[in-house]
Length: 381
Ligand SMILES: Nc1nc2c(ncn2[C@@H]2O[C@H](COP(=O)(O)OP(=O)(O)O)[C@@H](O)[C@H]2O)c(=O)[nH]1
Ligand SMILES: Nc1ncnc2c1ncn2[C@@H]1O[C@H](COP(=O)(O)OP(=O)(O)O)[C@@H](O)[C@H]1O
Image 1 (cartoon, rainbow, N blue to C red):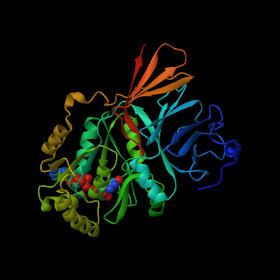
Image 2: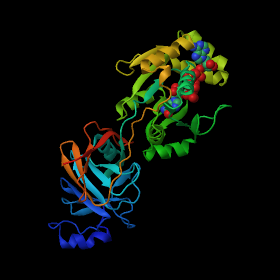
Image 3: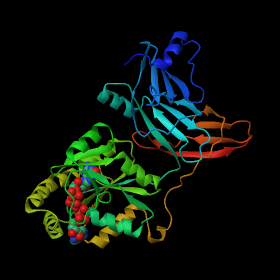
Image 4: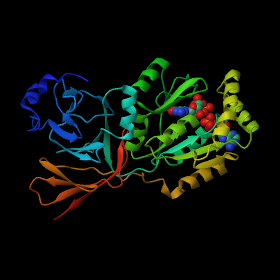
């Protein structure tokens, strides 16, 4: 909670009944209850892009800002949705950078406020169109998760992308940084966790592992369906997050088979194998937790198991040509204004006859990450 930034002193003295004296084009304000959110600004003081005036305390607050924020906000229009997020549309934007959401009171924000003990807002980029549900694959070490994922990615390279996790464990001989994992240190990873970069993280077999929000977004932005290879604790966290995924648990035909595979792989020391086998017992129990996994896949014969996996995902050989995305780019003119009609936003294009409708009725996701499922169409009147 702070003093009024110098930039706004004049505004405060003028009183608020007449609204803010905002820098034209750069700053827009939206009132949510007793708080006024000023969005935009090129000034040092407003470099976070968001300032909040609290009418109850009469103070300006610079909030903790999470998520990837839009580049220079100029000529943007804002509208409040459901009192929990502000829709921001940038005009004259020729890329898929035009639709943004600033979350101010969603469940995610409420959770983060408790953590940071400050005001918190979070950016989420709006994505027109959808990609198919991400796939979470869990199971004990050595069960064959990596083998199955490789088969899928080799057969359908345009359809699937791997979420590259961060880990503090040492790379194996054939593992490449940035491809199999982002190899990092405890210190760096703990910092990144604190600053909210991870969708989920867990300590597994004595090391830290985590899925960054960026890892999942990068796959989805490439129009591919994201595959996450994460442990059961991670699966639980993703279940509780806004990422709507399909959850698959891979089991070995027997514990003896698991041990044989782990040894045959030859990537761990005897001590590490023992630790992984001990943990496998608990993981196999956890795999039966009601409501956690949508499908249990027994990896007996690898080819048969792979066929069952493809059936679960509803894919066949003929599908490998087309990427799954229906992502569209929204080209917006200058001088736009917004009107809100239920879950549809009418984008008025200056004096042009044709308007654009942004349909939010199938919107999903949100911070941390992207807001997907938006649709647009032209509207003649
Ligand atoms: N929670 C979580 N678990 C992960 C992540 N990445 C990998 N894991 C899990 O960590 C465990 C160990 O992975 P790894 O060291 O590669 O060994 P492997 O499973 O024997 O190949 C496996 O259960 C992985 O599914 C992650 O980002 N988050
Ligand atoms: N169905 C199977 N039958 C026999 N060996 C298998 C089978 N699936 C995988 N493997 C082998 O087991 C070892 C562990 O598989 P991997 O995919 O690395 O497991 P995970 O990623 O679950 O730790 C590898 O050497 C792999 O070739």
